[in-house]
Amino acid sequence: MAYAITTGDYLRRRLRPLATRLRLRDTLLLASRTLWIGAAGFALVQIAGRLLPIPNLLLWSLVPPLLWVLVILGYLLVRPLPLPRVAQRVDSALDLRERLATALELSRRAEQEPLDEQQQADARAHADTLRPRMLPLRLDRRPLLLALVPLAIGLASALLPNPQDRVLQERAAVQQSVNQTASQIHQIQQQIAQDQTLTPEQRAQLEKELADLERKLRENPGNREQALADLSTAEARLQQRLDPSADARRAALEQLARNLQGLSGQQPTQRPSIGDAADQLKQLAQQLDKLTPEQRQQVAQNLGQQAAQMAQSDPQTAQSLSNAAQALQQGNIQQAQQSLNQAAQSAQQAQQQQAQQQALQQSLSQVQQGRQNIAQAGQQGQQAQQGQPGQNGQQGQQGQPGQQGQQGQQGQNGQQGQSQQGQGGGNGQGGNPQGGGGSKSNTLGRGQGGQSNVDPNGSGQPGSGQGRGNSGLVYQPYNPSNQTGRPDQVQGQLGANGETQVQQGQSNLPGANNPSIVPYEQVLPQYRRAAGEAVDQSAIPSHLKDYVRDYFSRLEPNR
Image (cartoon, rainbow, N blue to C red):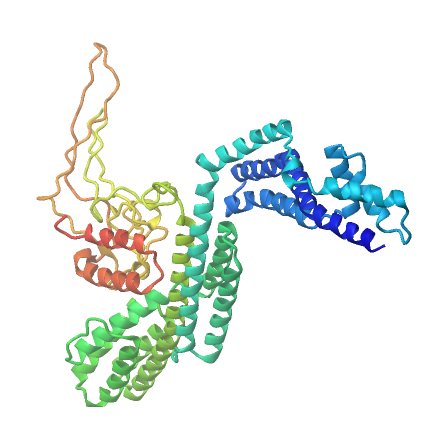
């Protein structure tokens, strides 16, 4: 009994190294037969990465081989392999005729017979000669060779340039630009929260819109289209809250402040504020009773001119100035003071509205800049020319302002040519300013060129779309010594001998009658200054500001 137990323990101790050898042998055989699965998974992910932009493609392509390795290791370490099964496999592999398996079975019996002891002694003797290397390792070569095909395809796909890398780079650049835009929106939001010139309602509403936009950008995974859509929606909401006449009203009030400073004997400020205009109006109201009748008449005349200039940009203030001018002309100083105080209150209200407009323009400018950065993020090469100024008919040919045509039309009978007046070019956006008529002065503060439509029939009435400048209708004086007409010839009908007769017109006069009364050189500095201030303070994209400045530089008389 003691001998049988000893033999069983001895056999188990001798079979454990053989069991490890069998595990390794089975694992290598399984690995050689299933290697193609991991290689095929690696190749499929690499091929998919060439069709779709997959971030971290190499890591994702290593997932199938890694899963295959984990399965193989689990098969090696976790798969159960009992010792009786090991004994049976060793007996079969080494042709021991079931000596080890029979000895293990007999060792479990409670009573031993003489034949059992002899069988166990024989099994023990054979177990002493067993070594793990006697069980050779095996590989299935055919499936192993087949696995080289998807493995080679996957490696080639990983090493060759992938066209989706550019898409991934663009997406990463878009994600970075989106995050940067969100940070800038957050900074604008903080600035608005600290802006005490805004009312609590204005701050709360603007902060809510910016916070909502920031949240959407933070949640964006790098989708360019979605980011542009969110920015465009926010831009549209901000655009709806902008007052299109705010810049013109601000420029008019600043000009009013300069004029009042000059009227009071002060040196006009280069960049006065709307608050300065309100202060000047209050001071003027307090000083009316100290002025002489002649000075009051001069003040009334100046206030009337200011009212005419501000009629379109700020009707409320213009009406108060007009009432003050009329009261002064009538000698009613008290009524004039009251009207001037009303104009000062209107200017103060405009100052509060201007603070809101500036906050809106600042936010709008940041949103537009962010949209432009995201649209251009990650793009290679030059940007397409689509939508740039000067194309699609939005920028006309440059010309001299108000140049009047002097070319006569010569007919067959030698009739004198009628001079025609040039028209302003293009849609009022950097077009050809060749019209000799008036311009919409209130739009110049917003960087938009005037469009002249003076009636060419000499009726003296402005045509459709003609506006009045700050100092009346504007024109370019006719200068025959420097501007000679360009003669044109109109071919007549063929004569009997195949000859044509050409007769030159004799007219050398300017074009049609024009109701404009102010040479444009007198108001050009004012318009240029107002346009420059509007460009600096409004939400005009930076790449378009040069077009506005170039437009006014081309209006210089020496050009």
